[in-house]
Length: 572
Image 1 (cartoon, rainbow, N blue to C red):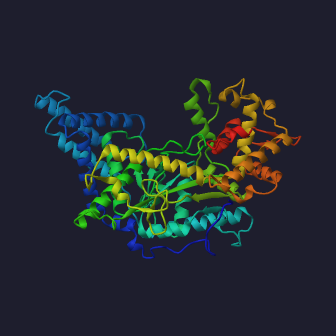
Image 2: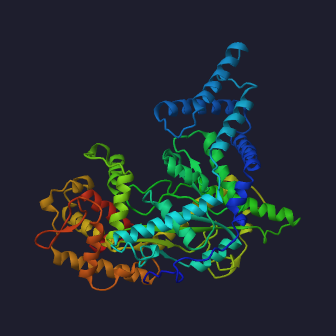
Image 3: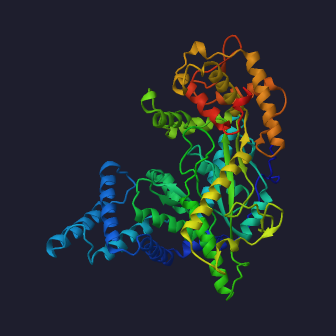
């Protein structure tokens, strides 16, 4: 089926909760101090449980955290790092050394000071992670982003003094918007978008505002706070800090506990389940399950709280958690060149040699946006069907539906011997199954663009032609004279693949953008034009004879990968 763009006449929906002081994110920020104290307490209790309440294991983890943090501070220091962190960890080290020398306790043995150090470390992380939410900053940022993008759109299109174009004309939203808005009032939404660009957070923020939802909590990489301007806004718009350099148990478990607790409190949340941007351009098929697991745990605790409040087994009124898959698609990606090079470097090692680097900065970002708007390109944000934390579809009333179309009580999935119980192994399996359901939804929700189609077809034709004698890395180094594809052959194969995609779309296995229908020559031109808007070396282009060629095989491979996983290779 063709893409359906749902919006009202203004391109924006009214807020589902008009009073900003009733937004969950505002209520959380207002209760920040007691929330952090609870976060510290819960994190410490959970970590003790993971360590079997062993004093020796706790001591070992403190030593490990100290070791890892000292290495991080020495090798990966950022401007945004707290100025007192070196002093803090120096005191931790001195405390451990002092106890060893003054009390004669051998290094490596648990001490009475471990409990205090444990609390101080967790408390430090618990105060570092949460952001705050400022209604005034939110109102200002909302106006600036919408006005700024719209003005840039109109200026790049040559109509600065008119309001002819709306932002929604280029940033298109698909999916059952009314259902999502209803569910936002009935439970807690967890948005799980695919991730291919640093622009994704900005696009998601605009989309959430555009469909009238209150702001979502989301984790922003601490490196983004290095920018004073971006850091100022993100910290006041509810973004919590995620420092991917910190790998110790105390930090990771405090971060996951924060995610669980804000979900329990009804704060809508957003995180990228792939963990980071897709390096090879493909849809994510291997997800990071840590934060998904916090959603499963939060749902169990909501049900447990519901049964306690009703003095019996009745979790029917407990707040449900709805997982919302989202797929973001661009015709061209700002960081494509650097992403694919990093991917090839990691996967190919000695087989692949890096010969250039790309570091997107402010100038590149401005150039990218200007070219995007001037070329009348588009970004498509596709909302998938909402599901519960077990992957069951959800109806408009928030009921979970089984494969036979019947409403089911998912609280029973947490029941053992007649009561809702905690079972780490069971819940880990539920999280894994939820991850699989998300991957399946990404494939169905993906909206295929012309740029994806033309890149996929061209790369597969070249792979079929040269693949018997070359591996992937040899194919990427193919000489320019061997990259030419006769246009007649290319158009025929492209149409064949497009028709297969149309059949898959009719069966609900994928979505197609509106421009994917109609004359194949016009479709090919549309795809090549969009692929060539930003990159100096074009992934795909017409040669002087009207045939198809590639000036950059790495980029062609990157954009080709968006259609892997659909078994379309057999059609070439």
